[in-house]
Amino acid sequence: MGKIGGFKEYNRADESNLAVAERVSNYNEFTIPVPKDKLREQGSRCMDCGIPFCHSGCPLGNLIPDFNDMVHQEEWQSALEILQSTNNFPEFTGRLCPAPCEKSCVLGIIKDPVSIENIEKSIVERGFAEGWIKPQPPKTRTGKTVAVIGSGPAGLAAAQQLNRAGHTVTVFERDNAIGGLLRYGIPNFKLEKGIIDRRVAILEAEGITFKTNVNVGVNFSVEELNQFDSIVLCGGATERRSLPTKGIESKGVVQAMDFLTQQTKVLYGESIPDQVKATGKDVIVIGGGDTGSDCIGTSNRHGAKSVTNFEILPKPPVGRSESTPWPFWPLQLKTSSSHEEGCDRNWLINTKEFISNEKGELTGLKTVEVQWKMTPGQRPELIEKEGSEKIWPCDLALLALGFTGPEKTLSEQLGIEIDARNNYKAHNYQTNVPHIFTAGDMRRGQSLIVWAISEGREAAREVDLFLMGSTNLPTKGKGDLPSL
Image (cartoon, rainbow, N blue to C red; front, side, top):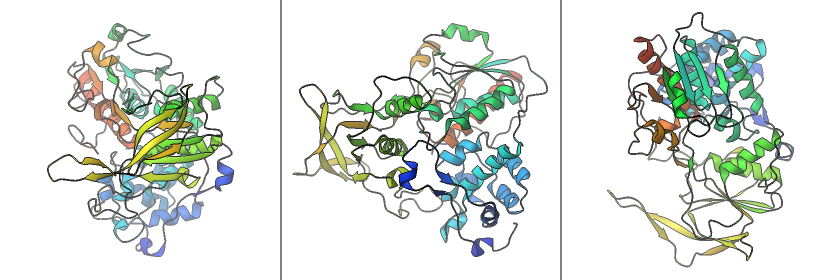
């Protein structure tokens, strides 16, 4: 513990943001870093707990008190070494992770928790700025080859770990650039794509081969995978949830991922003649999660006439719910930077109909207020509030409803079993086809980026063990990891 009582002397300090009017004029990241001298203070707020609950809160098992202490002592290079020992891509998690570690921070019981995520981001960005992060190709090769299908965080983590073990790794990505949802599912104002390119360049220099525009099972036959000794499926959970609602086929009802992907591609020079734009429109975003928030921020940057958000669940409490006490992930209201930029948020709203004109163009939404009836031992029942129907003007409805599981093209062609939750079935990341493994959202369902990296790391260890009979790759634990 670098400074005894530091948590009593210093208050939490977070990155600040550029003013709304300035940041919505472009798609750049808009955070303002905490000054370096303040970061040292933030590291000293860590209490070096006898039982660091932040370890269990972090799906990667990051050694949080250790790198906090190094930051307090201004031993930044040591802090980076500790951080990278458990996390392949802290530049991603430091921007995108919801920080379950902070929600389980012991200090959070009585005060604002340690600003772990910001410290993590500051460490890795200092590492890049100082030139400490360099390619580290393996000294020897095993002669074994591995194909990784999917280049999201799970696929990239699995690829880097397997490459470190000396295997020859090829990553296949069906889109035209590496990154998966990091590339086209996350807006630039949360993650500028140069951050991905910077990391991919290091992975390439370490010896990993990347192949884009290769859709395995479509334009690349699964038979061609026979050239590899092992395969790791990291294709994500990309089956989008829709609504069984009248008028869903109206022109102007758009899946959120189509909307977000198009905007990012246009930013990087691609021509999309029929790009979905929110400019001058009454926009309604259905779904209150992170993707819905991303749609709100993008719509504001398009110059929408109005932005409204619907959520079918009740409004969460501002503070922790009694049902999710510390150190559990809390049920509480989350207000993102996109919400702050302008949005009318509504809870307990169900869409009954998408209304269109004679041309099939969306003109409005019919909704009804709802309540949830909770009966012990039974599934919650949705009850409509009589007389609460309302028509909302709407030119563009964005469906941000999450995902129902992975696509089944590969499972069908490779003979992979599906589990009860509609994901690719695996034990210790190994499918029913012995040389084929799976990790990330494809195995566990839609989840957090930090879980994806953890899954990729753990799956790589199991692949190495399968190929070599033993492994020196690190693990945070044995067996299948529980769901969050």
